[in-house]
Amino acid sequence: MSGPNTNHDPVPVAALDPEAIEQAVQDALDACAGATDLAGLKSIRHSHQGDKSPLALANREIGGLPPGEKAEAGKRVGQARGRVAQAFKARQAELEAERDERILVEETLDLTVGTPHHRLGARHPISLVTERIEDIFVGMGWEIAEGPEIESEWLTFDALNIGKDHPARGEQDTFFVEPQDGGVILRTHTSPVQIRTMLERTPPIYVLCPGKVFRTDDLDATHTPVFHQFEGLVVDEGITMAHLRGALDTFVQGLFGEGIITRLRPNYFPFTEPSAEIDCRCWVCQGEDARCRTCGGTGWIELGGSGMVNRRVLASAGVDPDRYTGFAFGLGIERSLMLRHGVADMHDIIEGDVRFSSAFGMEI
Ligand code: PHE
Image (tube, rainbow, N blue to C red; front, side, top):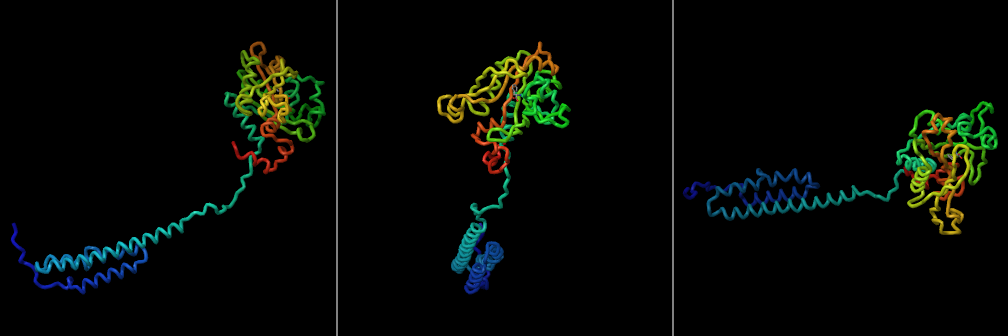
């Protein structure tokens, strides 16, 4: 055990002088009040509260005082340090509150303010509906095939079993490229793409041929000389009309809605045998409203033509008709768009007014 500490410095130290302490407190309080931001407060804090600050030094001197003086000096220094600490704490809180308030104002985002508006335009609904139709068939594993719009008469008519005297080949229907007997026309349907596909490849063939076609119709509410079609062609072993029906049902359900069914009605096309007209159930009234404006009360909507590919067409495209059979169908894209979206006038589709197109959005 060590003995009592008698070895103290009996001389009072200037640092413990009440006036000096009061002065140190005043200096600290003034500096504190003068700090205008948190960084400023932090930079002066050390001189008033740090290890070498006058009050810290005074505190250290207490140990050297005669025992009778320690208590009072300790109280005085302790209170002084308490006041300084209190002042710094209060000023810190004040400055933090000021900073928070300022940040709230400076960093406010006015979400109602208008931004510079870039009009993106709109994709044409013909492109949108074409892509949607393509997606349905690609989803069944089919490929997309394309061909030229300026086409040979042979691929457009002869290879499709359309005879020389067929009305479709006349000037009433077809645009000829000069010279008129040169055998080059604007394609009147996308069927030549099917012939091209069969000539280029061997079955199995599952293709969808969308594209622009041309006929000498005048522009009115339901006709246009330039329009779009998509035709499908399947050639494989053992293909029957049941496959045609299944493909068409999948298509109409993809485009017009769940549960829509198709109906095939006998018809005639030179390139298919047997041939059938494709109708689908009216998706508005489901056949239950005799006054339905969409289907005219019949319960069915005519979509296009179809059939089993004529043996003669297979043969002229180099496919063995004894080994393979196939089906084909053709539908108008404008008509599908008008039906699906209730577009009443063809002019709206061909004029390209962005106000019409933007109603369909940028859907892709
Ligand atoms: N090519 C026919 C047309 O444009 C449509 C069709 C295609 C019909 C395939 C039957 C089979 O009118």
